[in-house]
Length: 112
Length: 113
Image (cartoon, rainbow over all chains, first blue to last red):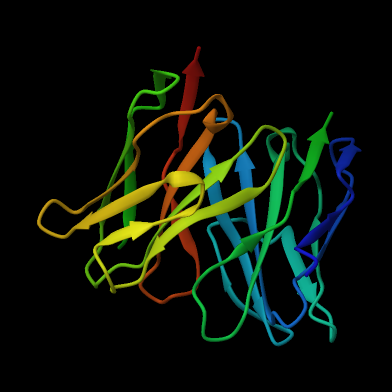
């Protein structure tokens, strides 16, 4: 069974630009979560999508947004990039009725 | 609100020694608790989980954790460390709404020969 996949592996952007990160959940999983792992700040919950809808978001500004597609894959968009957005962005998925989240390898976003 | 505290940002042990990584949680409801491991430049891998069944939980790679409600703790242990155990370990609790994981700051485990 294929795990959670994320693309790209690395992304380098300039301050003020937009970044788009992608995630494909495990087959059969309908929920997708996004987390930010920034140096010194630990792992912080960003967004949760389930059945195509945003269900919950963490304490992040509106320039962090995303969507979930009919095939349950997801996209995270970060607008007006700031230097402090540099981090590893992790995607996780889970199946309905299970609390366990399975994580992808992450996308390393660097903002210069 | 739920929270997780991992005592010790860095733990060093010798190969073959006991591994003990500490985690204390705060929760107003019976918690769902998890330990994840992260190897360099990789995502998180679930080691074990507590979901209100047995208080002693066995996980992968020889790790286990004991849920102690009276101490609000969920410490991770392994009887004998191996060089391949060197990684960062995260304790997490499911938030009250069941909508997200709340992670501790992580503990980096170093294993020396």
